Each structure stands twice: as structure tokens, then as C-alpha cells.
Image (cartoon, rainbow, N blue to C red; front, side, top):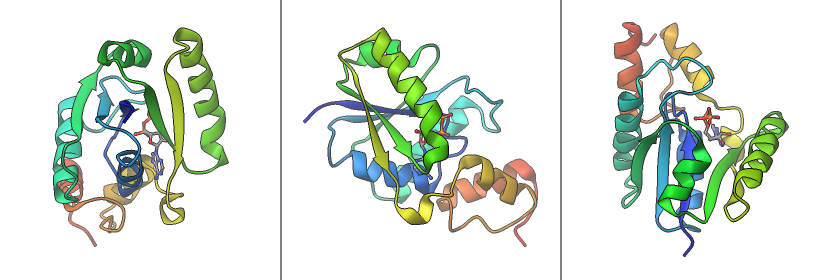
Length: 164
Ligand code: ADP
């Protein structure tokens, strides 16, 4: 099977990301989840916290054999050094498309041999983002439908509030 990397901020990992991982692991082996050290926005969780939460979430979901790494700098350099065939990205709605299209074409310019593959999430997760989850958790809202228990706990600790 071709080898792939699924990069992202994962600040924190949600069921939307997990849905993409479940779909990607049917197509790629090994599948490597790569947590970027310096995302575009200042993250709530440190890169090490985000990596650990991805690992714990995968364990909670019974998803074995998926490597989780962190990286900094250019994604394409990381992808090349790992020798992957593909970069996996998730698509929710058309709002994701412009940025993802730009990113994929730039990465193709940088390395024409690594393909970007887009996987669509299940409809029920199409509105879900790490930002929304953080917004709800910040005010003590129930995020159990959006994230695994380990992430729920971590959010609670971070914001120091109990769910309503
Ligand atoms: P980034 O900062 O690289 O966009 P994210 O953690 O926000 O990092 O997202 C990583 C990837 O997962 C992106 O391709 C994003 O579109 C996708 N993704 C995030 N949430 C969902 C979701 N609910 N359904 C499908 N894909 C998602």
C-alpha cells in the first residue's frame, strides 16, 4: 500500500480528524499523523500536548499501528524525508477548498512526486473544527459529541471550568 502523512495542527484532535484517519488507514500503510509545531494560529496546546492527545485519542478509538510524530518547518520537507507517496488532507465544506487547493498546488510545485489526497468527512462532522470545540469548551459547554474523552478532560483542565 502507498505510504501517507496526515499533517495538521490538531489543536486539539476532534472526531472530524479521527474520521479522516479511519478512512485514510484503509488506503494507506503506514499512515503517519504529523502534528505541526508552529501552526498558523497560536495554539492552545503545546506541540507535545497535541501529539500526546492524538496518541491517546487513537488508543481510545482502538486505532492501532498509526505513527504520530511532530514536525516543524516545511511540510513537504518532512514528507520527503519520510519517503511518503501522499499527503492526506480532510475536506469539510467548500470553505476549506480555497486554502487546501492553494496548499496542494504549492506542495506539488515543491515536489511533483508527492500527491495530495483529499478525503471527505462524514456529514455529521462537516461543521466540526478545533476552533469551535475550543469555543464551546471555554464556556463550559458539553463537547463530548465532538472529541474523545481524553481531549474533553484536557480541555477542562486547560480552561479550568466544569461542563454545564
Ligand atoms: P491545519 O491548521 O493544518 O488546517 P487542522 O488540525 O485544523 O490543521 O486540520 C488538519 C486537516 O484536517 C485539514 O486538512 C482539515 O481540513 C482537516 N479537518 C479538520 N477538521 C475536520 C473535520 N471535521 N472533517 C474533516 N476534515 C477535517
